[in-house]
Image (cartoon, rainbow, N blue to C red; front, top):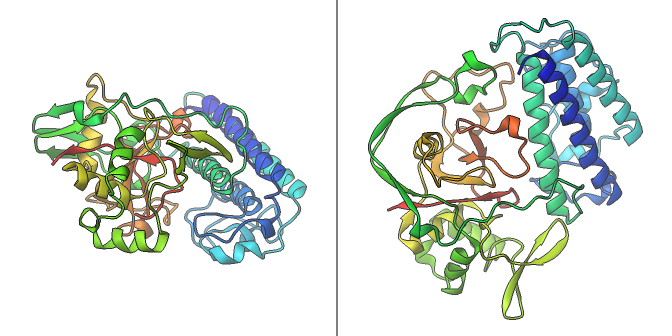
Length: 395
């Protein structure tokens, strides 16, 4: 994106943020006291302030990095650094910070956006399309887009209704994925983002040749119907399908089916943004942890795709390989590529290396501007609140 396209995208992201915050506020969740203290949530009022503070930090205050003292001048908001720096403000304390009222924080959001766009207006339309010239605006846009998706996770977790246009359902998976393998021969491909074409995250660099052995992968994600066969075959009761970490997760969660599934007469139902709906057998299964995906694969005699296999298949352009309706678990731990160097936002990737699992694709909640076969998302293996599913590979 050049300057003018970035201007429009930043305005769009802020409209999305405020619509999602308003939906949470309408359900009473602008009051932190009503928000449960879960590791997977932030109080929405804190999240709103953090989004604006992050933009101010990197664009208006021209921060060279993410450590204290690396920004120019103080925040526009008194105590902004004390409240909204996610590196310095422990998660559990975000419920008790004594934040400004929603109206005051919305005014702060408006002022930061107006000043950002005013600076952007001075960047020439023919500015070089490289990572350096427009990096701060591109970074804060990606950051806000990802937080907007997290706000939608929050709405789902709290059982609140999503704003109109935000709760699209993922595309149907097309039936039994085991009947729809796509075979790939051994190959070499260019893995990772190319910074010469614009913004990429530090964990996608450096673009480099990568080898894949021959493999066969589902054209579609595993459907509710296919996963239901695993459930009804006693998959959650048979330890042989679960890893040691998976058995510990299962014991702690006391699950007998995916999150939000519930028997309903002769069938099953699920919950979407507070509404209970009949389970659609043709939709991809969603809200499953890595442990559940791995257990299903063992039951089916399959495996999850490696991160590089998924990326190769996604960019190969083979007919029938559909992605983007849900994030997808892979078999790969989130690790740095060779030559990794952190960007200015140093805490984005490095603390998660080795702890999280690589997740690929996108979800219905991901703006098109953020979708790329190179994009590496990452989550702890037990997360099942995100809009995530999976596909399998031949064992």
